[in-house]
Length: 294
Ligand code: 0GY
Image 1 (cartoon, rainbow, N blue to C red):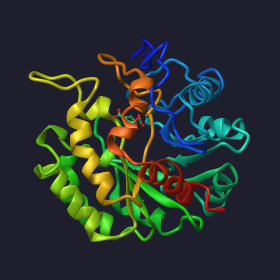
Image 2 (image 1 turned 90 degrees about the horizontal axis):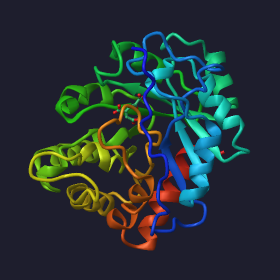
Image 3 (image 1 turned 30 degrees about the vertical axis):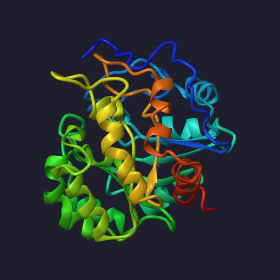
Image 4 (image 1 turned 180 degrees about the vertical axis):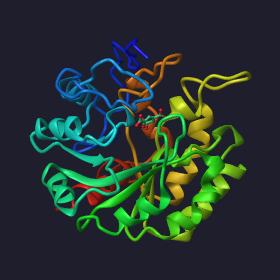
């Protein structure tokens, strides 16, 4: 693994949709810069540098006010690149860390001081070597007050993860809705199973994110403008308006074939949240409750 991947659009368009003032891009990442913040020896991809200056310039270009920076798998459990980006944001970013489950309590509190408000459990085999549920549950019991857990998994293991998720004692945020097959439509089996999960407890939230991953080009359709994504996700946002957040997923880790135009990704917002009331919940109220409660 030597070639460094550029996974983001070099010249994203200005979106037609203007986010409400105060809008939060609640799922994005930073990569490096590698010289200062080396990637993990266990990283499954080696990205080009995408540091805080690039992220904040994109934030301004797209019309957002704040970011939630999620520790990407390529940085392993060393959260210094994420915390560095938060420190450079002048209060306009908070973050989600990935930690060694044996992390001492003092280190969790240090991360809190650095703007972290949650930890991420990643179950994607192509991104991490192992995901020890028992250890994850142990650290979930020891989180600083007000933190939550972010979980990234694919739809085929949702049922298997139900007992694990039931046992988590803090609020949960699910990345990319657990990657449903959106081409099944809003009432397809994946969305039905995801709704059953949401109905099982009131403190599960979801990111209405990643049209570019969930509705990629395949035989018979898909790709920008991601119509199947809009059709499957709009009813979910309408039915669970207080439990959804939204993000660009910039710099789109690992994307190589269909690098999305971030302006087009922003233009998905009014298609999944057509009213200003819904947009305010999705972009401001819900992420603020999770990340800027204090
Ligand atoms: C995402 C999705 C992916 C990657 C990561 O941490 C990561 O490397 O999250 C992916 O490859 O699906 O949310 O950025």
